[in-house]
Length: 351
Ligand code: 2P0
Image (cartoon, rainbow, N blue to C red; front, side, top):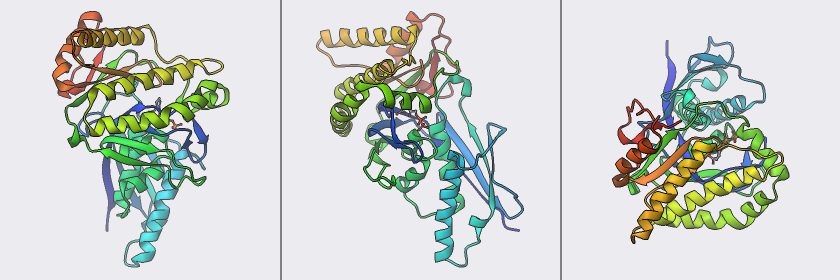
């Protein structure tokens, strides 16, 4: 008997221009475009296996070994439904193809990084889920087409369909058909850029991104300014900086955008705080490190960025990484060197 099964992986991505706010919460359409760097496929990633079988009674999903409920009309159900609908098109065109779209699927997903590290896993998770179903269903879809579906699982997941430097174009269509991810440049274009992840705290965050961003949309005047007057220019400028491999501009914009995202959180009513004192101390350290370089006629050497939590991601050219790690360990002496399967690319516990 034939076995219909496929496995795919997708890495975590870390935004330089932050997505924060939806104009359509059901279709997950953002209030601004965003841009991220997808980490290396060998490092932090989700791996998902999907299997279709006529004996399965219903769609089921296991995440890191525990079964998750697939709620009717929820994000998981939407992604699976959309993928089955693309499969149906394949079957209509090729009547010899097995009718996998009529079978239930069992999906098993694992992250190769500890969930306790406090790193967002929904981006890699939904990207891997959609990629594994695309492989199972032998879909002719491009990564951008698949990003339209992973976006409906979790907004940031659309960017993990590509490696390297990726933009999520917010689009303008009300059905979401042009709100998709595109490649700005592959990782091979600028392999010198590395990401150092500093795990400040592995506590679960107080305000989820999904609810936090909508409270910001409803209450923050600063978000309106950001959407109209800040992000469009930054998207162009950082894309140009990436294409020109201009780390100074890339770093400046990345830090400015992280700061504005957290300012917008503070401007929310009631305010949302994601960074803590250790996060702010790392900002001070990177700022001082850059200041010394610039004062000596050099350029920016590192860029911090923070998502919806206290953990720092530091982007830097490879030549600066050793210096940055020893600085972090020196100023945060409780830092335990992370058991680092990733070489220089991994995490450092500093909290
Ligand atoms: C980002 N974040 O661009 C921003 C920066 C957090 C801060 O994408 O509701 O988990 O699932 O679409 O994708 C977090 O938002 O939210 C996020 P949903 P998601 O990476």
